[in-house]
Amino acid sequence: MEETVNFSGFGGGIPVQVGDRAPEIQLTDTSGGTFSSAAKVADGPLVVAFYPLAFTGG
Image (cartoon, rainbow, N blue to C red; front, side, top):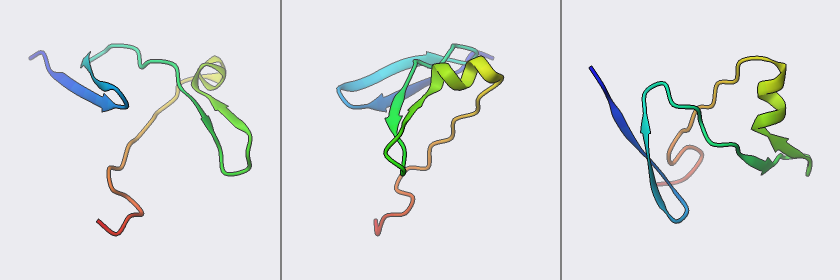
């Protein structure tokens, strides 16, 4: 069974197929440093989880 997920973000959605590689992301962490998914993947597998509306009042 092939599954497609619409990975929504800024500027619209990106269609993602099961097994596709995630796009590289860079974010500022809570200490002001830069988190790079490419740097973390170099160390081994990386799992990214999204929690929509987590830590919000809505």
